[in-house]
Image 1 (cartoon, one colour):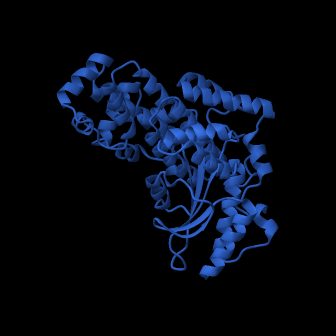
Image 2 (cartoon, rainbow, N blue to C red):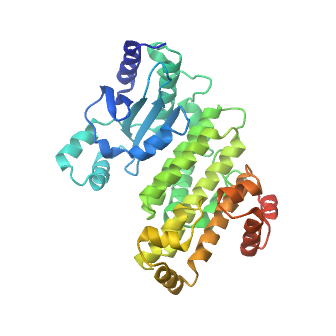
Image 3 (tube, rainbow, N blue to C red):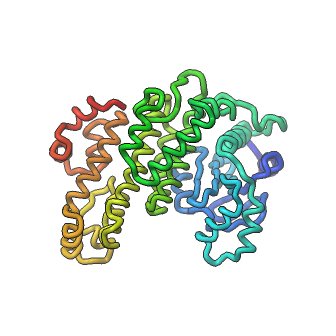
Length: 396
């Protein structure tokens, strides 16, 4: 059992080696703080709580302002609460970070923001993830290993060299161009162009990880998935997608990343994640010239696909009359709101079918269809094939 003073020693040693802010928190109470004062609104506490309650021992939150936080749940009954590491910033452009944070913290003075940003360490995610893994191992082993062990490769821990080798299937310049093309497709909602890029990637139909199966540890696969999600989420925000929705979807994909167990599964997951964010930007653009009423209704549908959605529920959430909403949506878009709901649910069903991890019945239940038969009828009406045929014919 790690006593309080031993836990404090581990955290102090970690802080000294990494120069990262570290806090031991119980709820909103700070037990130990090893950093300067931070803007408490820099991270979404609801998302943090959702991540900590997901059952994962280590979880991450990457804000739209490119601030990165890591959280480790402490093992009870020895200790209560969690360890928060961060923030650290992804970008080395501190002026850009001040601008981004200034948009988020309207009441903060420019001088205070400069002081805050200048106090933060610039880290790459491929450095931050292994640091978090090592801290986790140190806490669970109930002792802190030697000073040099912070970058030691444990069995489920990644090396920066391995990460670079996996992420870079071509030369560094080609890889950078490929990533820029991917992010541009997401930010501009170019679905078919993205599909074309992914299809030509090492012969893979989805995913961006070269097939080095058996060479790199599982942790590498998972961390590449998380890194890709962070970058794609930022692109989606730049493309106009609501930040709260992006944060919610990012948390879902990061949770998915922690559960992958093979390269093919990660490839499918990363490809699906990229296509999902691109589709959300395309949806925003499709309604960009429509009224705010239509845009809000479409956003509501996109954010509640796993629930039973009715026009009445959407109208109530928007505080408008249901008949008026239906009329205006049909008038401006040429389709009924009910049609949009079914179409978006079917698109999400396609993504789940490509992953091949759930049965037809499970997918129909996840998407809140009234029955499997109704789901199959709607799917065939909109796609021309049954869910089984689509899953069989899918090349992912």
